[in-house]
Amino acid sequence: MQRLNREAMAARVAKDIPEGAYVNLGIGLPTMVANFLPKEKDVFLQSENGLLGMGPAPADEDVDWDLINAGKQPVTLLAGGAYFHHGDSFAMMRGGHIDICVLGAFQVSVRGDLANWHTGAPDAIPAVGGAMDLAIGAKQVFVMMDLLTKTGESKLVETCTYPLTGLACVSRVYTDLAVFEVGPNGARVIEMVEGLTLDGLRELTKVPLEAA
Amino acid sequence: MINKIVTSMKEAVADLKDGASIMISGFGDAGSPHELIEAVIEHGATDLTIISNNAGAGENGIAALIKANRVRKVICSFPRQAASHHFDARYRAGEIELELVPQGNLAARIQAAGAGLGAIFTPTGYGTLLAEGKETREIDGRNYVLEYPIHADFALIKALSGDRWGNLVYRKVARNFGPIMAMAAKTTIVQVSEVVELGTLDPECIVTPGIFVNRLVRTAPQRAAIAA
Image (cartoon, rainbow over all chains, first blue to last red; front, side, top):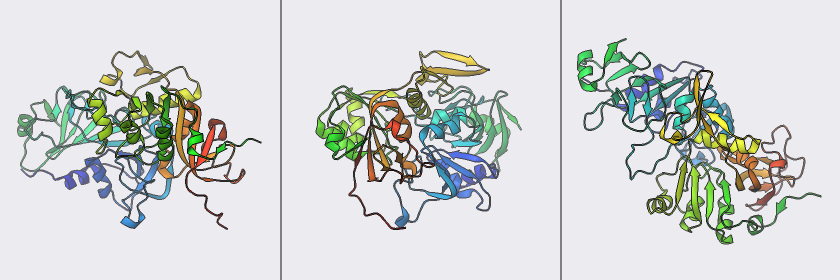
């Protein structure tokens, strides 16, 4: 059984993003998806801090700290890109104008509930940023995460135990072992890595799974 | 003749009071009015409520204000950052109150204040910890949370250019919360890199019209006009 590495996961997500889509990539792992979008196709990347048409990282000498992404890393603006204020940026999300957002997660339930902002640990300083707005606002929410925690527990669960980011908002879950569709009818397996069976996946996740 | 330009940072923040609520523009350092915040620290006002996206990082800006022990409460979406040690320490010590607001609700509540709305129904946060105890309503089959406007006594904003009537343009993503905070505060104070003559800013491209601005102060030394 060959797990997908991070690059392969990012490339797999990128494959499902069509030309012309308005896309928001979350902080961390999802940011890598941008590296695998085909250059010859127009995909519009939105960043919550007020830009559309986000381009790749600049050369060191071109870094401009007034041109950063949501992770506060320097980026560039493509020809045709635009700047706007926070009210408009979150109207793009909440108003259903963003086609796809890709987010990381602590847990996703088989019905599409998302937990990705807070572990609930009493000593943790909570921070939510734009996660809740993206979760309920984008037309499709893709989650990108390892299927299992470091201790082997499934992050695809029947019911989230971590505090929720949004209810019934995730449509697809891309992991290192399989790709799932989640929603009102539960979880369906779209594809698995070679050497893994549906029963094997059921054993790892301990959630009800159907083949797509 | 109306001239909203003041000559010093000190003068710009002279009427701050203890206990004031202050909106501060910026997303991380981009758009953060560091020089105005320095002036607030020198002014000495304390017991402040800060409304901003972050709670400061490193040693400047909001972090410096917190370090100087001037902040009673922070209303923000993302306090925890790699270098937010000044906030983290005071929060863990129970010396600072935090109201955590999803970023889009923060923007919408600020906009509601600026637009004179009594409240908003937002789908963001429904069914989560951050909506606990709040009124909800189903509208056309979707669930919403009732959220109230966020007003402030002052807004401190960083813009690129302004004129003596207070018209503003911003620079790249340093725009972020500036335009909406300018609308939501009783007194809006703006630091600009350059002051331009009336009529210089293209009226089609002015982002914040002067009606939302009370005072401007220039930070960088004025550059000589560049001939086209």
